[in-house]
Image 1 (cartoon, one colour):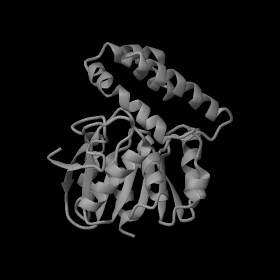
Image 2 (spheres, helix red, strand yellow):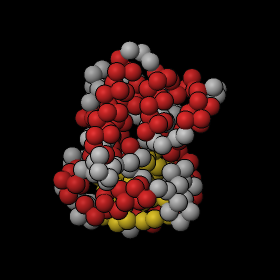
Image 3 (cartoon, rainbow, N blue to C red):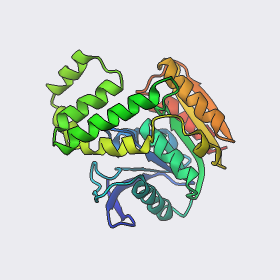
Image 4 (spheres, helix red, strand yellow):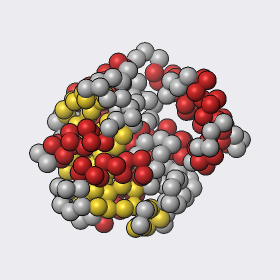
Length: 259
């Protein structure tokens, strides 16, 4: 990240910008930084000014206690002001929940696209989220960052042997380093259910995309998001999973943001 802005509460937010044209800001999900979504800049920067950034508490951005989702909305507001006062937003996974809330809160947003926001549509989803929240907050309060990462990986459905394998890998230290930000993504997810009332208040076009090879519940979540937004569109990308090919997704986003 080669640039920096200062958010309303004094927190430095690192970002990079490429291309020219209408601004598109990319928000990453949990356990990731702006580098995770930066590959989307390649298929988009021919038509748009693409901004990827490190959300607070990770990468090269700072952090200021206490956390609130409103602080992340202020980070987005500062970025939008920097790129000209209006932008389209894209978010993957829990980053999708964040950008949907940004649109619902009235930020100057042109369009919003999300990829696989992990909202629950199944019975017991809110209870599962509440249990995860309690255990996550307990682990972080006690400084058990590794346990916090394990909790998140189990929530995503990763097999136990893969979790233990990850714990022995060189990447584990980096995962523990940004573990406190898991609480931030969890807060952005609210009670874990599709926020139908908030989505109904969004007045701009919304694209909810999902991988055709992703689990059925995730496809249903994206479809529900699109149906709840007054100007929502649902897209399933054949053969894709949560680890989506940036070129495949980029083509869909370019079409949407250019419309």
